[in-house]
Amino acid sequence: MKRLLSSVIEIPERVHKGDFVLGLSQGVKDPAATLKDYVVTDQLVGCFDDALSFIRGSLETGNSKAAFLHGSFGSGKSHFMAVMHLLLSHNPDVRSVRELAPVISKHTAWLDGRKLLLVATHMIGAENLETPIFDSYVQTVTKRYPGTPLPGVYLTDRIFENAQAMRVQQGDELFFRVLSGNKAQSDSGWGSLDAA
Image (cartoon, rainbow, N blue to C red):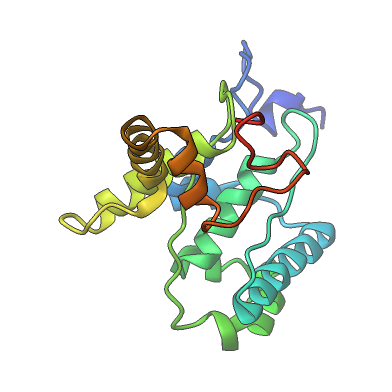
């Protein structure tokens, strides 16, 4: 019996850029849709294990670490991160994905009961790393914990404004002497008035 391919799988008449790409923030908000068509290959199982091990190592040592996830457009980076977000937030839907069971089982002891603040953001159009990361961090904290003091990520602006005002008030000589701890200026040029 002859069957058309369109009777077996859904083939859209038109395809637009981004139709098959999952946005990270969208994926986090709709776990069921994120997991519905997600195919967990053996390679992805290894990637989830590596990523969770990396996070565990950072938490256990107390050291801030960063990882770079790369791949071509549409290769599944955002989808991977959305599923990772679901794993770290103890989402029950992701825990029912059969292929992820060995990874979840391996990492359950350190992951269960741990509360992590997960900040989903992207860098599209960003001029630097700090602004989108800190903005998303502050928005996440403000939304999840209303009424709490804002994180101190923007306090440096006030510090520099205060330092500038003190420099104007005290003058360069006194300002830099106090700043250097009243040490005599060295010949290196660092901290000297000429270098300022």
